[in-house]
Length: 287
Image (cartoon, rainbow, N blue to C red):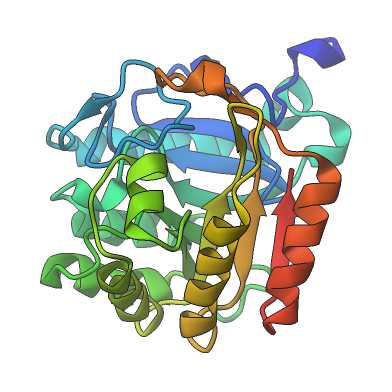
């Protein structure tokens, strides 16, 4: 197989696995191979971020999750990734490290009613593959990549306790510091104060990073006022989070705003990262 056929950070080809729920990606933020679990197989989400790379995105919640099928797919893929030839066939040599299992996919994972049951199943699978436990030198990370919108619901909060036991962490979305900014970027109308409280709820139960996507719109970077408001929100929660994942556009959006969006210069990203770091927060930049 030639290098152009390998998975890359720009090519998240989910057809490689041929599975319904499980897919591999080379993740620039995870730093290697990430096993994705997509519970939103109908491309439904309760947010509509303008940079979203999901085609035919709709508002809504996922259909019932077929947990036995998901378990079968996960076991099959782990077997191939850990003991088969998946890495040599599809992953460039420098990226052949299995870094995490990530709940991400095509919508908000916690909107699946079966999410707590999926975590119970996942724990069993990880134990069977010796990927979990205090006796393991490098237990695999289990990451929940979430918009955080449901982290005031008792069932979701209970699942975060369970996630923490699986060497888990949450990447919680915060793209703007004002109600208008959130509406413009995420196409939802919520108060930043309420969203920060959900973030605090989350961080109290499971290790949590903030994830923020930044980009130019109509050729212009985010305004100084928008960035000041965003930094002010970070300052409010810096004592409860582990850091910030600041990332740009690696792949094209599938939303109607796509023609208006573009990547920011590396220098802009570095300067913004320095401002975040100056608050006392660790920051990881993926531009």
